[in-house]
Amino acid sequence: MRENTKKTPKTWKIILIVILVIILLLLLRSAPTDCEPPLMDHGDGCCMDANNNNLCDSVEKINTTNQTNLST
Image (cartoon, rainbow, N blue to C red):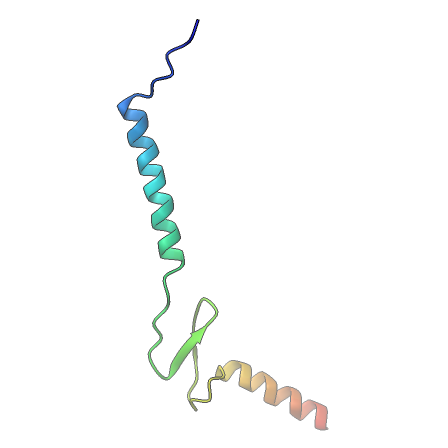
């Protein structure tokens, strides 16, 4: 004999809520960040770009330090 596999309305509501939550989380995760100058987009957030050369100032400082160390 076959068992009754008909889903109840409560089960459909739970499935629908789970799907909606997953979609919402995916949309929020992929939302672009809005960085106002002098900040710029970098990875998952913003970083300072005070001299507007499209390089994060923190990365620029690391590169400058490395060049100074190499030349001495």
